[in-house]
Amino acid sequence: MNPKKNLTISLLTAGAFVMLGAANIALANHSWGNYHWSRAANPFTLRVVDSMTSAWDAYLTEAKNDWSASSVLDLSAETGSIANNQRRQCKPVAGKIRACNYAYGSNGWLGLAQIWVSGNHITQGTAKVNDTYFNTSTYNTPAWRRLVMCQEIAHDFGLDHQDEDFSNPNLGSCMDYTSDPDGPPSNEHPNQHDYDQLETIYAHLDGSAQTNVPWWQGLFGQRPALAALPEATLDREIIGEWREDAQEWRDEAHAWGKEMRRDARNRTSLYVRELNKNEKVFTFVIWVDPPAEAH
Image 1 (tube, rainbow, N blue to C red):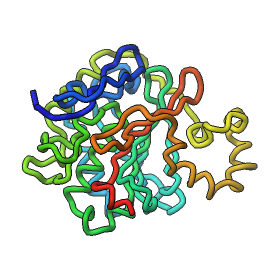
Image 2 (image 1 turned 30 degrees about the vertical axis):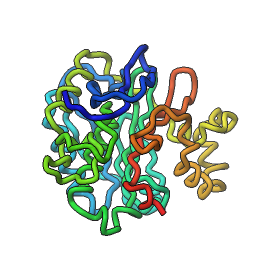
Image 3 (image 1 turned 90 degrees about the horizontal axis):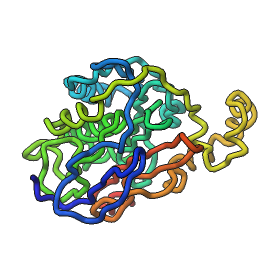
Image 4 (image 1 turned 135 degrees about the horizontal axis):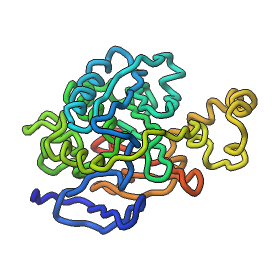
């Protein structure tokens, strides 16, 4: 077993993460609790809406192909809008993953993945990469782009990080935090443990129906009165008025809900926001390293 220091997460009840504290091993089971996409058979096809510009298309395709090598999952791309406002908002699409790149600002995060869950089922997801940092000499490399794209997409179908300490030796997995993504060994692609974990997550079969969680529930979750309104009403009477504020809320950590886990540098890497009794939004964050890069 790899002697890596990290926080070990154990699932004690379905959908509940419990902090166990520091340990001398990497995450033996790196999944988002019991969360998975509902499907009737394996392998199942998951659509990825490509709202990425040409600078990222090749890396998204590479990540899609890497994860499609799994025995339980096939990723299929479809063209999405690359208009600036569409990539900035990166609204989730029911039953699909949406991938976006944009200069989201000097907010400290390099990549961000979110899933909307109903019960134990993932209903939609987003993966965002922050061009504010990827346009700098530090991160504008094929290795960094491969690692972050591979990792953020994987969060959206249930995988967690294997290790969250940037200074530990590479595990040869894009689900491993590192300061040297091309290694050796390279952390630009999945490793066998990632594929094995996917087989564990999707070992059982269930129904294929997905629950449509409107995108604005995650955005306006802190305002129950608004979340209760029909989506059309929100679009017509509220969204236009609050467009700039809404993006600011989305990018601020408090809008992601409560902290669930911190990385080795004591920065929150996992948040959860409860939308109602059965529905939640989980947010995984990979921060720039070192933290000084954020300023």
